[in-house]
Every structure is written in structure tokens, then in C-alpha cells.
Length: 401
Image (cartoon, rainbow, N blue to C red; front, side, top):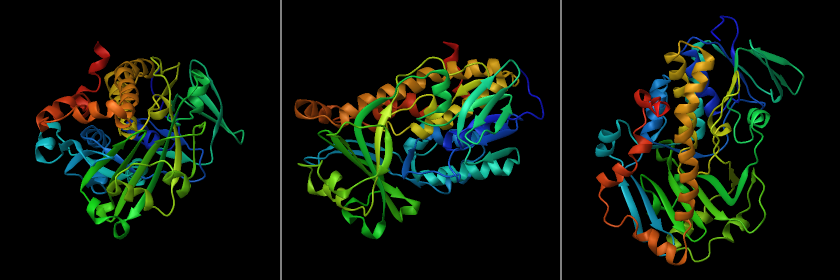
């Protein structure tokens, strides 16, 4: 399996993971064809958080400056109890944090990350993007992969990267495992600064944790807008999906929340509603000439704020695996998988545990509020070293164990 000049690598999905993969592949000399099922290339959603690990990955893909110019750099991360306003924990993300991890902590609109990656991909001249191309069937042999879209068109390439998100067609073909619907519902909205409470206009990634619920807010787009996210345990039987939300539903779930945090629920004029799910981590992502990447490989809940970061890390690691193995796809896919499985599974499992900690009630809530009492910034940094200490030079190290 070596590169043939005229045969592209196919990527299912033109989201953050797919475009990051496209950039990583072009840097190794591949031509890329991205198949996106939506009629236009773009991102839905609102804000996301970017740890230092994400910036290391952006730099490796050549879009570090594009991303930095669109991000808002926070001074700290902070957790408050949503019932009594007690400050559970605070992690400064200023100069000492940057020194420790080599990059900042930031918040950004999903669309701005997507735009940076899209611009980078287009500038290579090696990435073809097709929209309205939803995969319906996949075939492969010893020499190539062929995928068919809903119009019956065949697309052939030397490999297939399944970066087609949480409802991945590529994963369904090779793994076909069920989603684990959490019953947790996430409402997201973006609010103009002029409408956002002054007493919450902090330059921070802020979370209010409550019984069976939590609320998140942080600035976006130079502080001109604020991201608002609220999560609750649904009374209904949920199915994995996204739709418009109702103000009445969201307001019915936050009894007992302190007035300061409750302001967040009353702000948005419109909400988008996500019923969340993840999947059990799997040890095999690669199947012949196909491999999985991003949410297709390791869909996770939002509690670690690392979904997009993991997809971008995946892309960089895949690129490094190709570099190490001189673009031998079979060897590279194996190395990539071994380097990523444990780390991404840790994110999935930690996300579940973090959801429990955030939503604690009764005595568990008291234990949570005592967890980080008196902890110094350095001890917080030690605790997140495994997460934020990732970079290109160590990205393959897990594969050697």
C-alpha cells in the first residue's frame, strides 16, 4: 500500500475532523476528496473550548495563526455550585498555564475553527470537496476503496477516512454498534454582549453545577457575544438528535438554582436542543483501507470539552503515523489506532464520570464541593497534564506500550 499519484484519499465528512484530516494528509503529499452529506460545507453549533493540546495540533496542520486570530483567550476556568454560588474550583489559565503547557486556553465559535481549517484545506490546492454526497455503500479490495453516494455516484480512492460524525455510516458498515443515549439534553445558544448579564461577563470558561443539571457560559468573537449552554436530565425517553428547543422546556428543569445562574436560562431568544449520546470505546478503528476519526471513532459526551480537540489530535496523529511509515497506509493506520485508542477512551469514560460529578445531589454534592478545596494552581496543572500535555512530539508514544 503506497501512494499512487492520481488516486486520492477519500474522507467521509467535511466537519472539523474531516477537514483536519484533509490537511494532515496533504502535508504528507496525498490528494484528498472530501464527501460531505450536507448541501453546503459548514458547522452547526455554538462555542467550543480549546485546550493547549488543540493549539499544538493547529500548529502542526499549519492553521495555528488562523485559529488564534479568531479565539478568545480566557483568564481562568471556574466552577460554581448552582444552588449556593460556592466556588468549587478555579484554574488560572494565564501566563503560568501557558508556560506549563506551551499554549493558551481559549474559547471560540465552532464555525471559526471550521473556517480556519477550510481555508487551510483550500489553500493547499490538493483538496476537492463535494457537498450533497451522503455515503450509502462502501466496497474495498486489495487496491482501493469505492464508496457510493445517494445519487448512485461511485468515488474511488486508495483509502477511506470515516470522519462522518456521531452517526457515522463508515462505523455502521464496519462496527455497527449501538449508541448509548444518556438521557442528558443540552441546549445551546449565542447571546449578544448587550443582552448578557454584566455580573456574569467574566473572561473565563465558567460552569455552574447543580442537581441533575449544569450551566456554562463564556465569551466569543472578541467578547461581543456569549456562549450559553445548559444541560439537564430529561424526563422523556430521548433519541439521539438535534432540533429546535423550547424556552418553556428549558425553564421547567432548573428549580432551586440561584438567581445569578438562573439569569442564563432566561436569555436566549432561540435555542438548539441536542439529545446526547456516546458509544462504548472500541479497540479497532481500522478495517483494511478504511479507518475512523473523530466522533466516528470515539463519540463522547460534552463534559470534558474535548470532542473537537480529540478529532484534530486524531488528524495530526494520523499524519505523523504516515510520516513515520513513509506513507504505507496499512502500517500507518495500525500505528494511528494504537496511539489513539486509550487516550480517546479515557476522554469518553472521564466524560461520563465528569457528568456524574457536575450533576451530583445530596451528600454527593457536598463531596464534590470538597474535592478541590484549597488546591493550588500547580496541583490543578499536574492533574490535567495527561490532557493538555499532548503535542506532536509525543503523539505516537502511547503506541509503544
